[in-house]
Length: 142
Image (cartoon, one colour):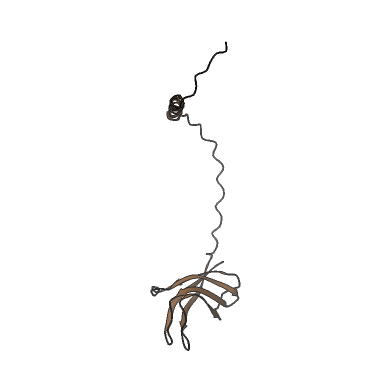
């Protein structure tokens, strides 16, 4: 006659899982020996400090006036030409020098061609005759 095995009842399965969990907990709490630190590498030479990557391009006033028609609220891109020192492909930053008016946000600025800067911003509705003006500092990272 062949030996019979105990059927795996849910209770026996839970007991076995608890035993395995206890063994794992015990294994995780045993202290581990830390290995020795490896050899220290040679200190490299200190490099020369180069010029700053920041190039101040002066000021730029982001402004718009609704002269004949209402300008709807939303995202818009304004183009400024004759910006001295701006080179095509420059990475540009635009910093408002005063607090932004409520509802305005400057998103990005780019230089598609030398001397031309495009500023993308969100602005509220401008009624006929209304205007806004945001003085900014323009910086290129080169």
